[in-house]
Image (tube, rainbow, N blue to C red; front, side, top):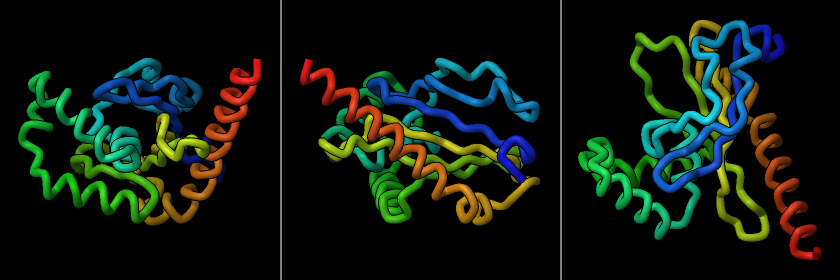
Length: 171
């Protein structure tokens, strides 16, 4: 079925220092969403699919800055995160082209996210995620069916952003 038939949501979030901020979401129109009010919510940079998609595709120097901000703020997850484990997450995410996280079995939802990469500077400006219920599909099914459309959406957002930047520079 279509996304509305299986209770999925999408969100768009740009990075803001040490987290991602959801600036667009379809949660409020999904009758299946558990949390309707997700707009402007900050989500963790390392412990969310949105954050991992951005974090994994940004420059190594920026990753170091993000971790530094998280650690300086006392973020226990960033402080305890094993650098080797984090490097493996980044490598896996970059090779697959999308990010996921492992949620507890008690959470009925799962998601994956892809970066929105500005083509001219080849750096992410945000990420788009796709959320779904585990009872509706497996991660493999979600990736097979929805990864390409979500990537197309991310590319379209990046292209519009590039057009906007070019027209602003020309003005």
